[in-house]
Length: 124
Image (tube, rainbow, N blue to C red):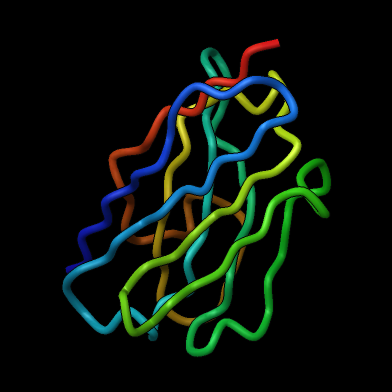
C-alpha cells in the first residue's frame, strides 16, 4: 500500500509560479513511476506529467505544459514535485499525484494509488 499526500496548491495570479509536492509513504517509493494529473470542474481527469521509476531518468509532459512545468523526484525524501511556471487561468484545477508500479504511462486508469488532491487557482 502507498499513501500519497499533495501540498503546495493555492491562489496565484496569471504568469506566476507554484511548486506542488507529493509525499509518499508505504512501499518502496523508488519502484514507482509517479504522475501528476489535474481535473477542472466539469471535465475529466487529465494527464499532466510523469517521471519514471528509479532515478527518474525520463520525464514526459502533456503538450500544453511542456517547457513550463517540470516534474522531479527525490527518492531520499519519498517526494515528487511539480514546478509550474507561467501559469494561466486554464491551469485552474485540482491537481493529483499518483503512483504506479513498473513503466510510466499516461492514462489515469493505469495508476494504482492516488492522493487526495490540491487545489490550484490561477486568477486573470
